[in-house]
Amino acid sequence: MPLGVFGLFLVPVQLLAIMGALAAYRLPRIFGFTRSMALLLITPALALMLMGLTDRLAMFGGFAVSRLAFSLRMPLAIDYINPRTDSEIRATVLSVQPLGRSLVLAVMAPLVGLIAERSFTGTFAAIGALTLVTGGTAYLLWLHAGRTSEKLQAR
Image 1 (cartoon, rainbow, N blue to C red):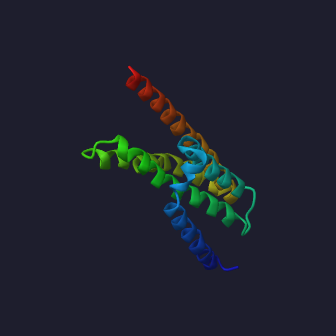
Image 2 (cartoon, one colour):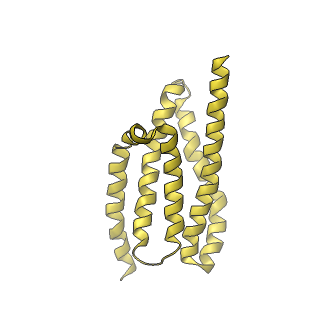
Image 3 (cartoon, rainbow, N blue to C red):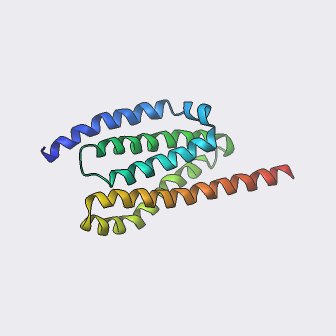
């Protein structure tokens, strides 16, 4: 199959991501906000790691799952941050997540490039594992900050 055809497979993936972002508000109603955020961290990481097991067209299933999870996360994060942040600093607070992602990617990119030199599919497994580690760390810090905030408010 010509390499250019793979771009056509991205069209339904992007449409799925758009529909997911529009329906993101339903996820916390089903699982609760904290569990939804955990699910949206674990799911793409596992999908990326599973993509490392194959070099076939089936990889697009993992890519679709991972892209959908990423598209669901941002609307939920914005809905969480907006009522907790003064309007004067809201844009700055909302820019922290993309900034953090860019910093993590800047650090990960050379490592992922080295892995890609050896194994194309191994690259996806590495990205999934790094996503789980960095995202898991951020998730645990967020949980800790929420508990600390609740304790301070209870005083």
